[in-house]
Image (cartoon, rainbow, N blue to C red; front, side, top):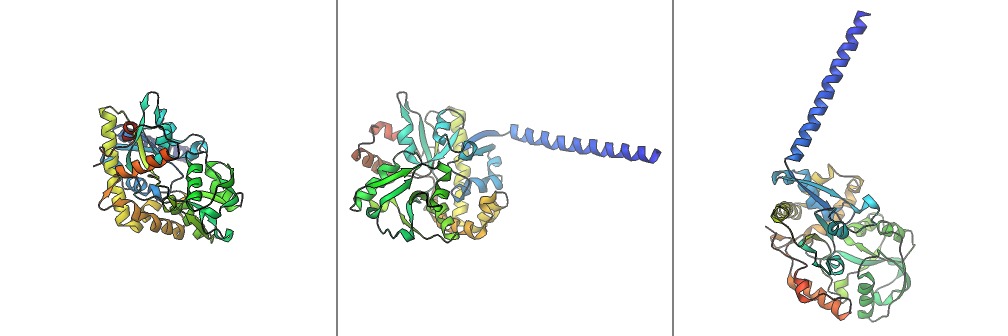
Length: 339
C-alpha cells in the first residue's frame, strides 16, 4: 500500500512538473509573440507556390528577425464569401493579397482611394482561361455554347469577352457559379467547359492528374492584364503601420529572392511545415518550376511599373468600365515601401 501511495505521489509530481513545463513553454511563446509586432495578412487562395516566399520566411524565422509575428489566413476560413480586399477595407487584416482589378473596382469610394498595392508578388501574369484539350478549341474565338465557371469577380466577363472578340469571335456562353473555391473541382467534373485558373497551381494539378489543357492568357489576346497578385495595404498609414509595411516587404523581398534563386531547396524547407497541398512531391515541384522565374525582375522583387497599371486602366476606359481619374489611378499603387 505504501509503495502504491509512493507511485501515486511520484506520478503526481511528474505530472505537475510536466504541466509546469508546458505552462512555461506557453508563457514563453506568448511572451515572445508579445515582444513582436503582429501583422495580419489575408492570402488570396489556399496556400500554394505563389505564397512560397511568405512560407519560407515563416519557416526560416525571418519575420521574427525583423520583429514581426505574421498571422496569415486564407479564404477557406469563410469559404471565400468575403474577398481579402474587403477584409482589408473593414480593418480585419493589415494587408491582403489579391489581383489589381480588385483595387480598380473596390478601393475608391466617396471618401477617396482607401487601399493600394505596395508590391507585386509576380512580375508576369500566370493566370489563364482554360478548357480541356478534348474540346478541340484552338482559339478564344471558338468558345461557343460553353459554360464558363465564374468567381463573381470584377472584369472576368469583360476580359474573356474581349479576348474572344480580339480573336475574331463573338461571346456566346453561359456562366455557372459553383463557389469560388469549388471552381476547379467543378471544371474537372465537367460542370463547365471554361475556367480562369492559375497555371502555376491548377495548371500543374492538371498535368499531375493527366488532364490535358488548352490555355489562353489575356495578354496574348489583346487584353493588357495587370498584376495578378499584389500585396494591398491601406492608402493612409500612420508611422507605425508604415514601418510595419517596410519591414514586412524587406523580409518578403529577401524570401522571394531566395525562392527564385534556389527554388527546390526552398521548397524542401517549406514542405517540412505545410499541409496536404505540399505533400505530392512531383506536383509541387512542377508547380514551383512553373512559377519561380516569374517572381523577380532582374535582381529586384515587388517593383511595379507605371506603364503596366496605365495600360490596364486605358483598356478599362476603352471598355467603358473604369471611372477612376488619373489622380486616383496614381494612388492605387506605390513602390515607396519596398527596400
